[in-house]
Image 1 (cartoon, rainbow, N blue to C red):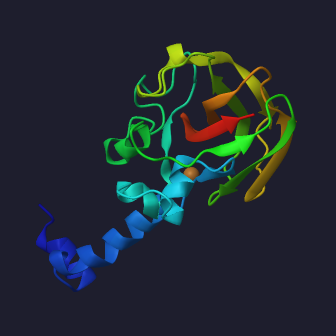
Image 2 (cartoon, rainbow, N blue to C red):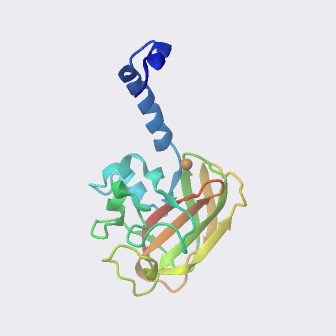
Image 3 (cartoon, rainbow, N blue to C red):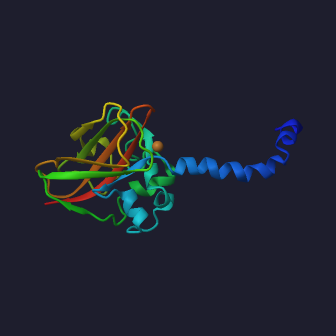
Length: 201
Ligand SMILES: [Cu+2]
């Protein structure tokens, strides 16, 4: 219970104050963080309206934040794309018509992230599904090659709001795969996770 003393101090009722405080608190959450737009992440496709019934991720594609330490720690198997967020569970739904980005296996590629908060960064790291993975089951560690095909160290530096880095795409891939992109923040216990659907040629 907030006492009369506090109400007197603000000069207005406690209930009158709540609408002023809450939007500020939510704006702080919604404006943070980042997502991949090349290759386009599932979050980004939701934001663009390319996929329907995404739920709230369409309004905040940058918010797929979860515990860092992947692959030894990090989000739970089956909830990797949503980073354990129940509200973002559509991201783990393999039955949705996720658009696939055609990329050439083994070629150079420029990865691009859009950040809405440029956190001090440990590294970006990228994973791909194994040959023979099951695209009909939600993504798990057992379906991923757990050695990253690309790691970009930042050593605690702050990235720009548009992050670009070039690396070699995994070799020996054909057809539908997923790329799991991870952005490890340096000064929190969290990371950001992005799933992208790829058609390798
Ligand atoms: Cu953030």
